[in-house]
Image 1 (cartoon, rainbow, N blue to C red):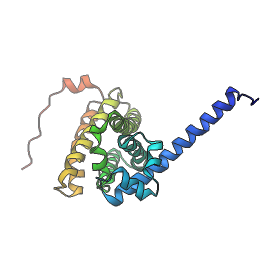
Image 2: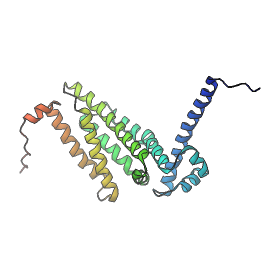
Image 3: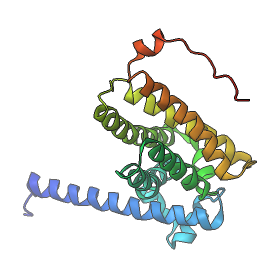
Image 4: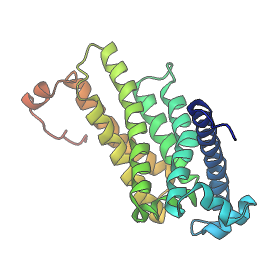
Length: 231
């Protein structure tokens, strides 16, 4: 009689398969991103498989459908391109606060602008299922929490309140993301102009936070008037 496999052997095989599946999904996601860059944002599963050099059956072995592949590719793009670039920009201790704001906005905008096929591919699939939307939301969370960590650290060094850091960070990320999304639709102005307009908006908020020492009560107790234009 054949001996029954004990639970540890079964669990070990299951773990090895899960590890293999995760590694293979990452590899195929990289291949999908390369295929989209080469063939355009309207690339289908057949073309992605052909570009990678596998059959479509292989893709469906590791992904439920195109939406699942898109969500995996979205997170892979975040993990390999956007998050490391933002972390490097925000980790520059030699930059002052204005320099950090400029570096972070520039990195986000230029990373998106340099991927004219990847961005519309991802955004075009947002109606494709909860998985894609969840991947985008997770990407936004990663960026916002990264920014919140840096903002909190800088404010604490100055002795300011930091309880609004996460709200401010999500607000900045949302504004930059939406404005960049609109710009990607027509690229009607130079990228440098977009970056500088966004920097004006972000720096205005940072200045208001600093003037109130991070305290919303101080901010609300002050008079707020637009400056008089210089002659």
